[in-house]
Image (cartoon, rainbow, N blue to C red):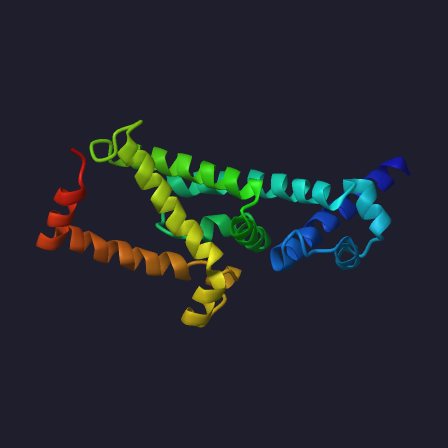
Length: 209
């Protein structure tokens, strides 16, 4: 009986967390209500408080869960890069990507940790793939990784605008490749530009001393 109760508690705890992820993603932490989270999870507010205490405690649990899953996905993505692609992140779950989009927009501590992790693994990818162009430990590698990560994170944050322009919900799992495909085309075009006379002039003008 105790074992069955423990399993029930674990199931309820996960349902509450997933309901909170959805509510926080849609409304933001400040506007989300424990009553709505409890209703979506099919439990009482008292059970939510039993497992997580306050809304802040529930947010911390969501942050930890999302960070554990998505930071690993970023590492996987860096190992097999698809510029701008969200496919690897979606392996962790569409709901977590939506939660991340809200966290990035709200500037939450979890988003800061995620972005720092994304920059770190992106820098590792750049320095290992093009060591001459992006020397390890250099400001050039650091800045390129930060800007590249911001470009990709920005696409997630601005997903409502992208969805309206592209005609699909870009954060829906079935459309996980549309941002990556478009950004790959941009990278290809910019590569051609970089090899042009104007691009070479711009590189020389703003390159390292």
